[in-house]
Length: 380
Ligand code: MG
Image (tube, rainbow, N blue to C red):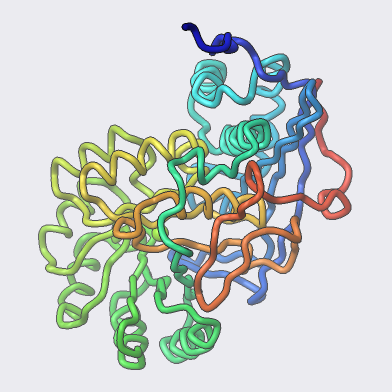
């Protein structure tokens, strides 16, 4: 006996009819955020994408570069890229996330950050149409919640230690110190902060590519007795591999790991112990999920986050992080807690240094149209 006739898999569930692009300024809660090379920001420039469809479903995504000098990405570039790519997407089925991802890669070479918000909105629409949260589509939630880390803006050793103490009071148990400056000062920053740690707390010293190899090796020698992690010490792959072989500290690679080819190479070379997966760095949830699954298969723990953003990007992070096996979640960022603007009242909220993926269908958030304001770009 045959079962009921089912829709063929190639039957389109919906079509994109219009794309609205919003620009949102996100002032930083701490006033500013500073990292290696004297880089500092007071306000994030975020882009929110709203995908409208012929079924009435609406999906959202967000991308927020960390200024123009952190990754090869900048805020105005997001909007320029969307103006270029957007018209090709009208009439496409956003729920076929793999097809959409490949289509975008064929229509616009590179520029993964431009595609990240669209990809996020496609997953939102797939979840909305299926009536399940994105975390379910990504494999389901592991555990009750995900542990968060806090980035500690670069400052004097004493002020960085004070900052750690204040974020400890907010429930964080993992701290990422922004170093990558003068090696002697960086050693002092690390030693001062580690001296005040409580049992069970974890510290990562993130140089954000700021050291030359000779400087990295000096810092390693100055902190070799401490139980800490080092993140992205130098700019190039070869430099990072060189210095990685000269320390016993676990290494996290971030800026360098922007796709599967370099992830495989770094794994083959034993170049790192942990990788940092940022949604916009790799082009959105689809590629981040591929890398996440590969890391789980290869035994590599991950930091899961994005370069910045508000409640929308944080919801996407929460879905990917919560659907990642707990043993592989090295750390996760609640990007929305760094900024003063709320773009969705139902975005993930930190409780005791942890957050959960929203449980409503799709990304599970309802962006506030009054906060998004008028679109700066309308396509379709
Ligand atoms: Mg990093």
